[in-house]
Image (cartoon, rainbow over the protein chains, first blue to last red):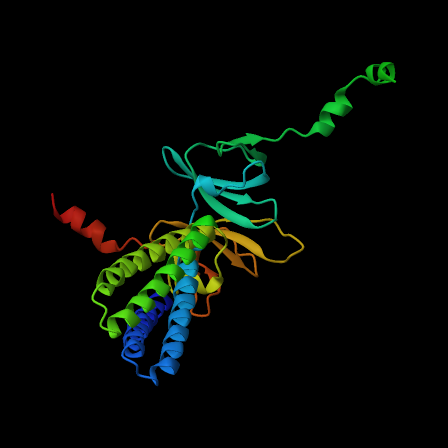
Length: 144
Length: 142
């Protein structure tokens, strides 16, 4: 069996917890030497925890995320969409902070710039600049 | 993000209670047993909440190249256009059919690729050779 970071972290974590409880009982029994071992056991617990966190974060990174992780009211760019079944699409998006993230959505999104609505649906962004250009010049002059 | 913080708070609190009940057990306090069991349950609960939180927070973001399946044949579905940051987001279909996003330093060609032992991608071409034996057996059957 391949020892991954997750199993290593879990083993360290359980060992640290077990020893910290044992040394806790020793302190209750007025064993003065147990204090230093307890500190050591707590350091082991924290180390195991960090190993486990790192392992579990790396293991799931890259796989499609759920739609509730979309940034609400953020303007994102849909880079690609791949259908995987009748009502699920793997969508690669560029987030407002330029990071790429893949999502699994249940409806087909439009390609290009989209704005995330409150209910996590995507609405295409229509550039305001084109509307201004198409307006007749006479109207803007009348407003002046 | 909220789930991670909630999980860590539950974890730390139950760890303190667990340790304190351990000391009480050592002092021959008979009521400490129930706190010890409760603290263990809450420790497990906090751990699960934390794990779910950290999984959903990092899911979807580009993974590093060392997570590529070595010697596996994958399909490059999409590569992001070149940006000044010189890293490319690559959507790859893994051998088990799942799609995963990777961040690579060089742009691979779209299509079938084979992952080398140094995690580099090499274009993979399917060579279809129809063995002549099939034709001969077909003629023999009738």
